[in-house]
Length: 276
Image (cartoon, rainbow, N blue to C red; front, top):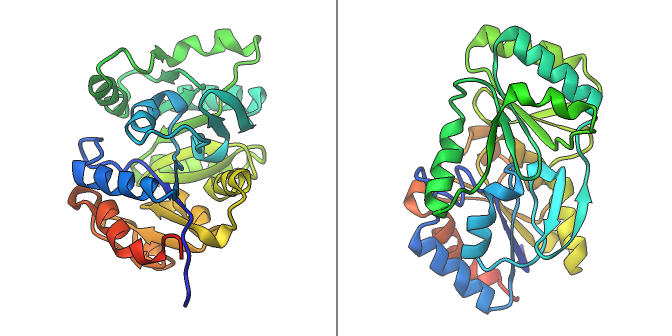
């Protein structure tokens, strides 16, 4: 099958980033080499913009990129391509449910995350801020969120970590009754909650349209459930060696793991399709 790739789009956690949340020097060099060939590059992540800035700088990315699984598509130095926050009433429902069930949860605005007490997911923000060498992303207690409800708090994504079976089923049962909230998974037991009709596939199409690139000339890299619509929207897809089996099953190619330069190795393999 003849294949042409004009835009590469990378998920971050478990894909472009290794377990230390860094882009390896080898992978970074491979990405820079394709940028020199005028191939477009972007990020397609569930992270908020403030948790992507370090990597955007490393990639010298000045175009649009996907944040919050497609609920926000910023363009550095320009107006957003798209933004659709969660409905404030739905945010309130989630807040009270998480509090009542004593769940590890968080709410994400563009530039801040509101965490429940002793949330194990806070390690990611602490690690990012250490790598960034600056304060990075501000954190706040989840209890401060209700004060923003009357001011139309702009929450683009919520997350709840429910690794135990009983917790997991309770969360899923609650969400199935909420028609104004959609969910996917970015890790096992980690629910990503956004507005309905939004996903990474939607986001990457917006970016391809911005550049005037046909969807079949986009190559997506990913590792988990939230990357399924991402893969379905493009012409070429690359699953990481550490990806969930059902994502590997629909991928065009499977590469090595995120800790073994899987993205960099895939770029070398795909080089024959750049600019064909």
